[in-house]
Amino acid sequence: MKRKAKRHILPNEKLILSILNAASGAPEHALAFYDGYIREMATDPVYAADGTRTGYLYDEDLAQELRVALSQSLPVVREVLIKRHFTNRPVVVVLTDLAN
Image (cartoon, rainbow, N blue to C red; front, side, top):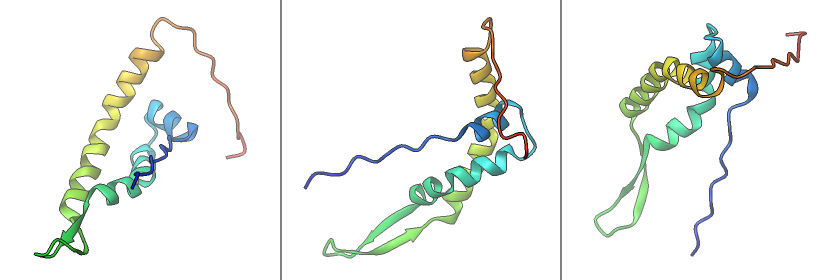
């Protein structure tokens, strides 16, 4: 049986801009965006001795380590984005959704 390719969902522009601007809520928004992925990565199937899957085990410690690593990586991500995409290039900023 062929395995379905997973669809990659990219962060929206508000999250990217909050990371670039080092906004105060950026870590929380990033954690909320990646929460499903973190849960999936911290969940392992449990198998019986005969090889049948009996359920799943969620590793909260691993999930917390992933959350901490993501939070700590945001300043590095910001720095890399700025160096790779905004250094020595003109930047046009388009403001939308000014009501919020």
